[in-house]
Image 1 (cartoon, protein in one colour):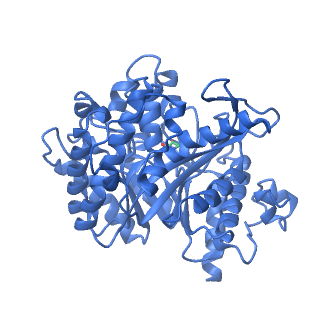
Image 2 (cartoon, helix red, strand yellow):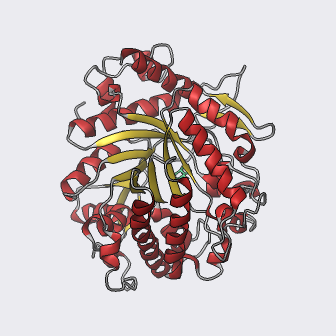
Length: 471
Ligand code: IFM
């Protein structure tokens, strides 16, 4: 029981712990979730919700190109319309505010706001200004990610993240955005999940731009992290009052057996998923074990790069979804050994809240300079249907409850965690899985664009209301 995050809420009735809405969500009195300054919000990303890909001067991104290629995205879906948020943003913000959510994490589409010569696109900039101003009017804390994977295609045509110059173009983009939006952004994140951009985009080709070479992945990662490091001082100079950070997805790897080989495999899994990003940011060096896994893939690093990359952060955003059970592959690496009989989501991902707590407490032990943490994404996909105007996503309520409990346990163990964003505010374009996988706490009917608040969103709203009442 002590090792089970769900046990934190063992005072709840069995109906509630299964995820019913019958009773309000009642964390124990000493839970950090009751603290007024523990931020609870929701997250989205530009390409996944905006649509309007060729309106008002937006240029093509690598995801427009990739999703147009047959076989790359399930059912041939693209982000051309998505949730049509570009046109429906006012109603979407009303919905966010009506749920009582206190924070909103969004991203800016780089190809919407500047052209290939770096000339600002006023219409694109105005869209984000209107959006952020409205969020501020509503009293919502704004977390803005500069890069959530929609690289302008013209930069990919010149090598994308394999070209060091892209890092300098990113710093120019950060400069423009922080000059234009200063005062409306509470926290800037340079990149979302560089692991996905580097590994899925350049290492195995499952994401745009679809290249598959381990050496490309390590070089792309280096340029992504360099872009981050070059942007941070620019953001600090232009918008001193805001927080600056980066968002990393983290993965729990557990060994399939007690054998030394399987233990080593789990260690290498976490090096590849976590230390590859966190060591350069927080220790100023790549983990050498990475190059045991991928021999001969050391990136080209110039003098001063690692200092640039490891400049202090105001916060670290953490995205967590599942764990992977691994065994040795008999050579240098690991192989997945899916566990049977465990709870899974529509993505096939195992529900494993303890992994979030264990990773966070482990990071605190490993990185003595670990910055304050926000959980910038956590959530699950399910095949949600609207019945009589409602969506009964009980598995999601249970998932959220257990992961919030894990966050609470990590806080009690001394990790400085300041907030939690649900992924996602609404169902959206789930990259290579298109629209089939539904991560939202609000359902989107893509044929009508009708939004239906799911039970999980009602459940979160109820808790926030209660917290407000008690404050
Ligand atoms: O939808 C994605 C998001 O864009 C990045 N983090 C993981 C989510 C779910 O796969």
